[in-house]
Amino acid sequence: MELLKRLLFPVIMLLLAAGFWSSPQLQQIAAGVAIFLFGMLSLERGFQSFTGGFIEHVLKRSTSTTARSLGFGVLATTLMQSSSLVSVLTISFISAGLMSLNAGLGVIFGANLGTTTGAWLIAGFGLSVNLAQLAMPMLVFGVMLLFQPNQTRAGIGHILAGIGFLFLGIDYMKEGFATLQSGLDLSAFSSGGISALLIYTLFGAVATVIMQSSHATLVLTLTALSAGHVGYTDALSLAIGANIGTTVTAVLGSLGANVAGKRLALGHLMFNLITGATALLLMPVLKWNVDLLARLLHIAADDYTLKLALFHTLFNLLGIAIMVPKLDTLRRWLEKRISRKTPDWQQPQFLNDAAMATPAAAVTVTRQESIRLYRLATDVMIQGLGWDVDEFLRGQPVSLLNDHSSSAVHNDMQQNYEQRVKGIYSAIISFISSAREKSSGRYDEQLRELRAADHHLIEALKATKHLQRNLLFYLHSENSEMAAAYHQLREQIGNVLRAIQEIRQLEDPLESALALDHQLLLNEREREQSDSLIEGLIRSRSISAEMATSLMTDKGYAQDIVRALINAARYLFIDDQVPQAETPESLQLDTADLSVINQSLEDRQTDDAQPTEQKP
Image (cartoon, rainbow, N blue to C red; front, side, top):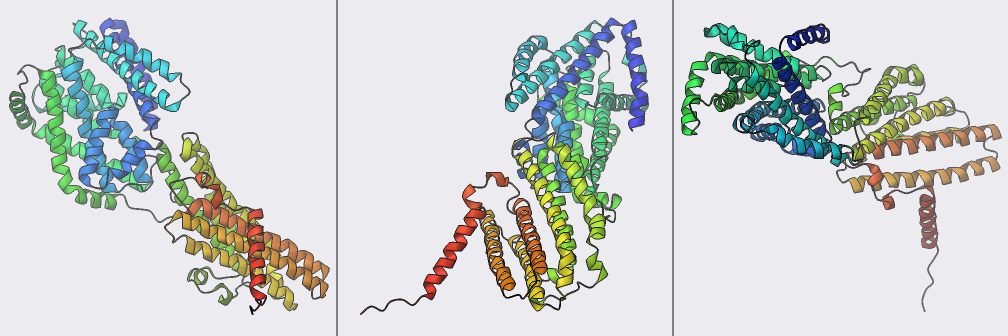
């Protein structure tokens, strides 16, 4: 596809240059199309500046049923006047798992119907009013807002400027067709019958593929029809072709998507092809219905532009009427046609380029992949500590787990890290770097925190690798005191991993945060108690100074592992909607706080142990 675009580009440029040389009117029409397309780009950019929360929130809440999905597609396309943007957003959400395939198909079907509102506005309003006069103030105010540092104001500026350029482009095209007497007579291609329908349908599809906008093709068709340069029936075929051409945008948008996104793009293609083929086959019936409805709506018999808008709406409604009852059948066919490949566990499973289209989808897939990284990294850690992963995950008490530390597979942490973790971690960091360029506000903060969580996981792995060397040696030491101390270090890490497993099942973010702080509290108490234990072992000469040095160093590694795991869990498992930076400071305890709490607990235990004075 990219090669085809590169080959077609110079050909189109040469044809336009030749057309400009031969016809000033064609030059004005082409300039109108260019201005219109620039307006579409500005309009899309304006609405994309609001995809940092509001649109995503509405999209997730408005697609719970097929009817809601259809309604959202119609409304969003009506407001944004860009079915391409709606398609890209939908592919992004379905690729991130935020939307079901049925809901995505409903949005796409509704977006097709939503494109008809633009045809109604242009046919009923745009061709009878001097749009250039309306465009000028919008362009002035839009450009003024564009220079504002506030993102919301700049977004509104893009929208106003986009509408202004749309109006100006339509006016240019209208004036160009009005003065065009020769040089472009599309009626010369009309030979009547089915061949003419197919030729003009092909023209409409090709024009939409070239301009990447069915709206631009419809505007061009409406202005040519109003000036008499194209016949009514031929204009209807052009409208059908414009609908078919929009599927190319969806297919291009799905190239970087996962299986779900590709299924949606194929569903979009099937909808438009079936709808277009049905409309061509039933053209006489549809024209008769358009004439009937036109009389009921008091549309003049020779007002072909409004009748074209009515036809465009009617055949899209026909497509929805055909496809919606068969939605489940279409979904099953798509799932069978595009099946999921056997996953390569050394490659990312959730990251995909399509999810970068919206910050919400980018955060979602990053969190999913980071949670997967947590599982892979902790599996490597559990093996490195000498336990069986399946046995550990079954929930047996840590102190009763079988010891596999002498097995070779548990000793080579570096190889396990290279095979299972390193590639996934690198892919996540690369994805976050790209995604943060398009995100801001809380989404940017969430991406930053997820990157921090992944970094904490890698630090925990590194500390485990450092600890492992002495751990596997002293676990089987003849010195019972050293063996007991290292068993305690290992169990301390295992208890934290087990506690995080349980915390993941909690639904209340506040309860989860307090549970993690409780783990920090226990960890700090372990540190203080182990300091006293080591001093006692040295004084009693139960261990040598060399052993004490190793034990103190490895105790520090264990502390680092526990803190890194808790910090990673805080970012990954507390609340997937709110950045932890927004968590009240009172819920986040530092080392000084933990020491004070521990001292208070010890003082209370001492007071409780002392006998109370008997009252006379």
